[in-house]
Length: 230
Image (cartoon, rainbow, N blue to C red; front, side):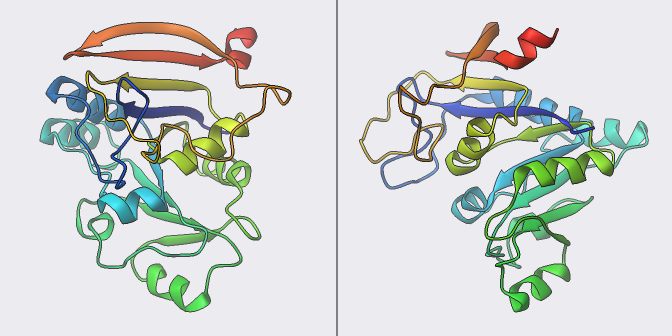
């Protein structure tokens, strides 16, 4: 069975996730950072796309030592499995993803990834081919289900979120809307990709919950198909 997929992200009040220079920007506050850390700790695995890794040098590690201790006490790895979708094996082997934290690290690549790059990354993480020219997310979810991942947190960026949403591969979306406006026609929005036309139809969501955190709002939606199945 495929994992339950939770998309978790933050955006400004005008829907931006970084500046027009694609620089990371603090959108939420300490309360929301703590919430995201707790969600990571609850999940079996955390996933991002290669763009997020290259832009932010993200480690995907838990920050709160208490959460790490709690996971270990329950018989789980201290850190959830950390996953990167990297079709061309562009990961930098000296990044924080490899240097920080313990636990399983998995990189999904496509068959088009250079063999020499794969060989370098295999010295530091499990590298799994899944897809011909691009990583096939459906195949990834099947493989994760087979190894026991029941709850997956997907943190972005915009390209990966387009892939998950456009293919209807998510169950729940939790979006923190921060109390700031970034602006800029070239500033990335929450979901990238080519987008849908009106004739193609959009992705319907069902509102589950709205909560005030710091000076912003945490909005939780379900994939409409999830609402219909319960």
